[in-house]
View 1 (cartoon, rainbow, N blue to C red):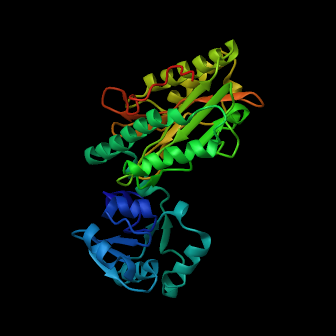
View 2: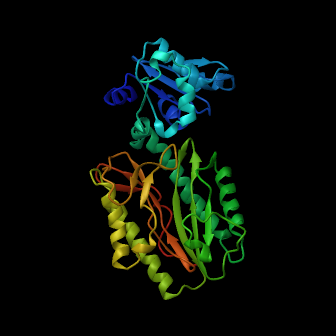
View 3: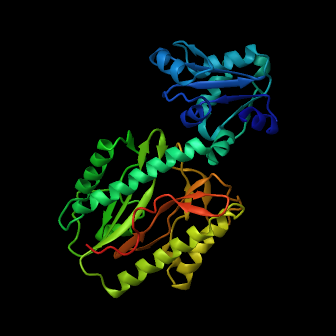
Amino acid sequence: MAIRAAAAAGVEALLVTHPADVRYLTGFTGSNGALAMAGGRACLFTDGRYKTQAKTEAKGLRVVVEQKAATVLAVEWLVAAGVKRCGFDAAQTSVAGLDKLRKTLPGSLRRAFFVPVEGLVARLREVKDADEIVLVRRAADLGCKLFEGVLEHVVAGAPEVEVAAALEFKARMAGASAMSFETIVASGERSALPHGHATAATLPRRGFCTLDFGVLLEGYCSDMTRTVHLGKANQQEWDVYHSVLEAQKAAVAAVAPGISCGDVDEAARSVLRRDKLDRFFSHSTGHGVGLEIHEGPRLAAKQKQVLEAGMVVTIEPGVYLPGEFGIRIEDMVLVTQSGGEVLTAASPKAWIEL
């Protein structure tokens, strides 16, 4: 599949170095690997730390283990195979890294050998197969269970970092290998920070607390956000929360194969526009999730890419009133043949007042 995509991009070979892409194509989970693909052949290069691991995980694939840089070995293999034009992901390769690789080439090849094919493997990863969907479901299910368990720690006076630590401890005890990103616990006025990472600030006696978190389970990520209120809310807080909830539900309902990412974004944004809150929605409506926490597609204004069955996306509109409060509600949604299936539905997003 990757070689066909490379050929369509006008290259005869492919050099893959981004760890998530290498894992997707080979199963190898090590931190140092380079995959070379050309002429119906493929070879994985790594170092001595991963000798046993690479041969166990990358079954059916030739594995070369040497102390020499994996990328250099891969380029040498491609040159020996007679390759003249090799695709590489410019989004994952630094200028210095590319310059280093070019220096390993014979002078006659340096100018035209490397051809940027940005995001080629990443685009293949956007549509998950049945096995991947099973793993994403498991990660999403664990996230829902964690939310249920962490609410007992969301109490006035508790430091945000302690709430985050409790959630992360429960995640590791439940089998997560890591969190898929730094846990966000933002309360009171800090809830108006879209990415308000947990601090020593204490949860207020009255106000919102936003929890945005995800786990890494069997290599796949989850991502969800719930916002709860401590104490008795006022009318403005109640109204804004339900505007965000309606916007989120509208965007979820818009998810279906063939629908553009921009249209899903507009479904959420139009509700907030009606309620004169759209100027306080400062980010895109969602993104893809899989081996990485942020993948394609991007659900944002004017994005023309269309959704396809098998994609997993987040739907996460928010409203952030500086100096007052913020609210975000996020679900993971699987694009099916008939619409969208919420993978985090087991976790309630209706109003919660603690």
